[in-house]
Amino acid sequence: MKIARFSRIGFILAAAGSAVGLGNIWKFPYITGEYGGGAFVFVYLLTVLFIGFSIMIAEMLIGYIGRKDTVSSFESIAPTHKHLWKYGGFQGLAGLFIMIFYSVVIGWIFHYIITSLSTLPASIKEAESTFNTMLHTDIWTQLFYHSVAFVWITYVLTKGIKGGIEKMNLVLMPALMVILVGMFIYALSLDAFPKAVHFMFAPDWSKINSEAFVVAVGHAFFTLSLGMGAIMTYAASLEKNSNIVKAAFWVVFLDTTIAIVAGLMLFTFLYQYGAGPAKGPGLVFISLPAAFYEMGIIGNAFAVLFFIALAFAGLTSSVSLVEPMVQYFIDRFSWSRLKASILMGLFFYLIGIIALLSNIDGFKEALTWGDKNFFDWVDYFTAAIMLPIGGLIMALFVGFVIDKRKVESILKPQLGFAFEAWYFSLRYITPVAMFIVMLNLLGVF
Ligand code: PFF
Image (cartoon, rainbow, N blue to C red; front, side):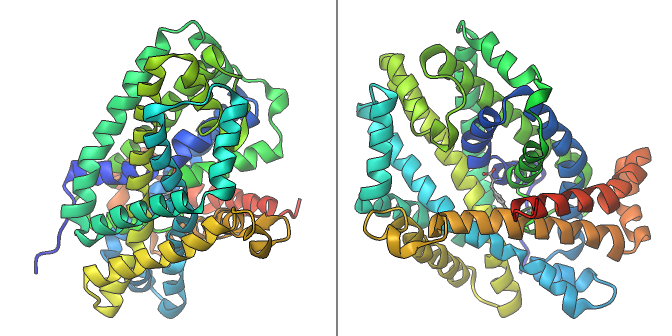
């Protein structure tokens, strides 16, 4: 059987589709708001450039050499201790765990597309109560849209790399970009635009502390889809003789540009019509709809388009979160793609229902341990623990385990004189940074 491979543009769009997700459009603007704007953006950009970009190349390299699911790739590439290194591939599980809450959030977005067609909240207060009512009391709406997300994502996965993942990304990614650029151009015409630029790019260094640094590093990983084998699994379907460095560059470039465009646009709207930037995780579901309301009828159109773009971003990321484990069962257990996709889909769908219930009054109490409910625990466990560990393993694997000559033979022609700098960063800078992030998130300091 001929193995399906991405076309060159298909790979870049699929990897960018994985990277551009809720992290860019929902999370980046609100953490930028929380950590004071320009100085935070500056640290984030440096992190993306020096740490994110180098791990992106490393992760693509493992997939590109390994050619199989993450576990088999680690196992076949490791020169010794294969049976131990193969566990490096199980970080693919992190993606499946992330889907437990990611799918629920995509469900909220679907719901907001539909409701924005007719009504928008007239004030922040109203927006807050609408959102909280859905979150804490409305099981059926959330369950319905969570189910829609499950069916959509699973269906695309059953169609495989070419007919499912590549095809969806080839349509949704350009559509997403057109919507965002269109809204950005409108934002450019508003008086508040310079204010948004100032907020995002004028650094106030007093706002930068160790926590902001750690959040920036963690976010660079999450937003670039690193450390979980998503990019690795996609890279396993690259044509031989592909230019990894170029592909990595495009993915990082698109992801960063889209985050900045989305941020500038949102902050312009919030300054012009709303309550300003620092509004936390509710920014997109609470402050923004209230700002859209102030725009009048065009606000409804904008709200619908915005949530469609957000849904597209979330869906293209979702398939990449599940695909590593789908590929794992296909390669290691000879499951059919249909069986692997449905069973992995059911995994996140069913446990996702528990995550959904853990926000609902009446169930919340039984599903809360310590200061977090199940939903937040899954988020915390994946982002704080699994993700940095995955990143660390990949950096160490490419930096110290794979024979340098092998790495050099593939990457030196692509990186040129920058090869040594990249290698150094991968061996020393990245592991130390990841370690610090992990300790901080675990509350050690
Ligand atoms: N990069 C995605 C986002 O920014 O929302 C999330 C993500 C997708 C993380 C795939 C990790 C991953 F493997």
